[in-house]
Length: 324
Image 1 (cartoon, rainbow, N blue to C red):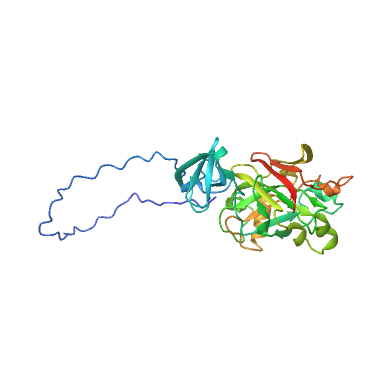
Image 2 (cartoon, rainbow, N blue to C red; image 1 turned 180 degrees about the vertical axis):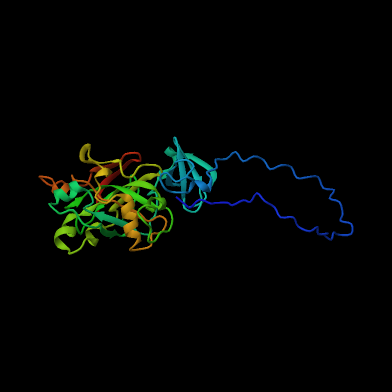
């Protein structure tokens, strides 16, 4: 996803006049033994040139699964391979160099895969979701923001707020994670700016969102209302993956991103013409039909529930529900 380097070479050489260089009168001979060759580094090495986001980019080396995890008091980014996570030096848009520190997944706590500087979200972006709202398909993406304090990770509890506990709903979504700064990018180039993709739940207090307030900020921004995880996948086709939500074992939503009104490339391009997108920014791409408040009777989250979101090619994000 980052620009490829080009090197120009020339096959012709121009003859130059001989130049006599001055040398020291008698440089002392180096009598020290030559340094032994450096030992070969056998630790895992994930080259920075793998940080080239963009499906099909010619310089992308191998797909990777990127996690953010905690062990003890230490929080790190890492690469998951099999049942092992290997820490990297910094955030993945800064360095993909492995530190050599590895842990089994059973040893660590997976966190939200990023701490985003901004959380953009899209409303009514599936035809089926617009249909269940009895709304016309929007002519342009409907954009709103969620507070960054809403972000939690896999296994963390969604908290039903005392202010509005009764109509809290779920929304399964594919989430774009931006990998490098972008502004005014074209649709054709847009996916080159995505580090990868994760799973999200756009938790929403419907009473606040749709009846009590004239805009959506409060209903979308209570603490814990943006679970993300379990990791970032760098190599999926964002325009053709399944999206599903399961509440206490019952399938509530089932669709595919090929039903998006505005696909991922168009969303990145459109939002980048509004605001500069920084690395780590997330874009929640919208949810399909099957949300709780449109069911008969309505189904809302209750203490003791478990809500699971699954996106094909990525995995499952699971969160329990508790009362504040």
